[in-house]
Length: 287
Image 1 (tube, rainbow, N blue to C red):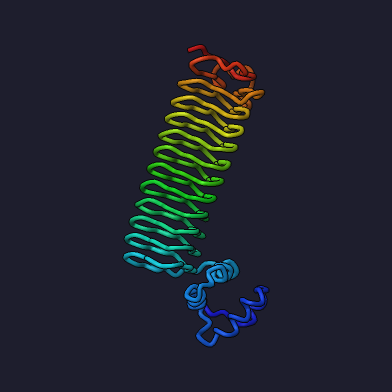
Image 2: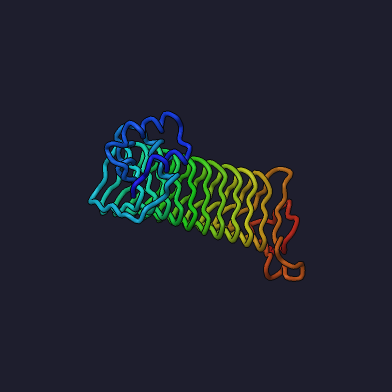
């Protein structure tokens, strides 16, 4: 794919970036060559801007392993072993690794991000489709997944976490920011978010569930331990905990918000080791 001077100018680049392009276009105007040259000259942000403007390609880069300071590729990456990038790993298409996937600042893909090993990211992680980690996932910044987020082990997110089409975690899930999920959420261990938890469908956890603000589910909520929130606990259907159900001070527990009153005994049951003191809606079933 060739990029002309007029094509670049029409995208209204910054003055410094446009001057760089005019100085370096004699080396070729191939899209990927320009991206590679920008990265080699430590202009990674300009390479990402170029990719944002001209979009992904259908090219595929296959490798046994990747170790680099930074990598910006317009197509998809298929790596049979480890991927280790010191700063930014960016692909216009998918990123697939047969072992570990690590980047110091950011991992971004226009399509899926998949690895048979663990994910370690020192900044943001963004995917235009699914994210799958065969082991654990540790993301220091924001995690945005447009599709289904699947982690076989534990998942730690240092900021906001968003999954567009479901979230499946085999062990504990800890998010230091708000957690939003466009469908259902299931964890094999505990679920802990330091801000709002909002899930469009149901929430199921193998241990405790705790939210730093409100806890909201469009369907039901089920925990193998306690259910706690520093705000309100709201569910479209029932709420069930092996332990206690504890909302924040001054807040209540609301079950059956999407269920007709006469259907509460079947579809809005509230079960716990003790009746919540602030149970405001739903059908309580004594243990």
